[in-house]
Image (cartoon, rainbow, N blue to C red; front, side, top):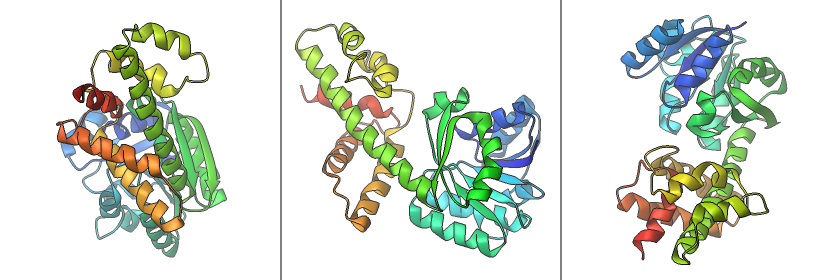
Amino acid sequence: MAKTAFLGLGVMGYPMAGHMAKAGHEVTVYNRTAAKADKWVSEFGGTAAATPREAAQGADFVMACVGNDDDLRGICTGEDGAFAGMSSGATFVDHTTVSQQVTLELSSLAAERGLGFVDAPVSGGQAGAENGQLVIMCGGDQAKYDAAEPVMQSYAKLCKRLGESGAGQLCKMVNQICIAGLVQGLSEGLHFAEKAGLDGAAVVDVIGGGAAGSWQMVNRYQTMLADEFEHGFAVDWMRKDLDICLRTANENGASLPVTALVDQFYKDVQKMGGGRWDTSSLIKRLRAMG
């Protein structure tokens, strides 16, 4: 069992760190709101630290799951950052969905300090984190990945290295690009079924077992039909991720016309007050259009 730290106890990080503790790892946690860290300790044991640096001291692996590029820089760098507390040979594992640019920046800084850095964004949402069934796509040095993988397995159903530093974040971009198109297609299909007078649940029961089936269909069709969206992966976060995808596409020359269009549809949802709604709320936009 490893001596570990987990930085960021949001809807994903809280249960992920919990699975590490349940697996027998020694876990020290840090959260910007200290009360959340104290709550975690009361539930899972371990220790809470006042700063990322304190949490990372003596840890073999430091896991993180925060909000965006700036949040990640904030917990890694500076006098109270995790890098300042980590010992040479330790590895930082970043589960945040961020740009490849900040990944390469922090990976280089870590290497200068004799630290490993694995970019390891996740897919599976809050339910995947709570059930320990996340898919983790990783980039970084092979040996550092191999050492960190057993710890990640405590909350993963699949963990795979795609290449050197940044490859994990690029794979997560592919994931989000695919989801954007899938959710819009599912929204249009269910909206069409409603307008046609069909039983949406019956339709999904039939087509879900065929070529149209997807994770989004299986896990979201019921709440979509019920017009319920106060759950899941927020539209605000999806727009953050799609912005990363579109900016990277501008750099590498990829053409993402559907992704760009769906990003604007999500902007419409935000204007409807749905920034914290689940990404499947694209159907609510269609319903509002008549």
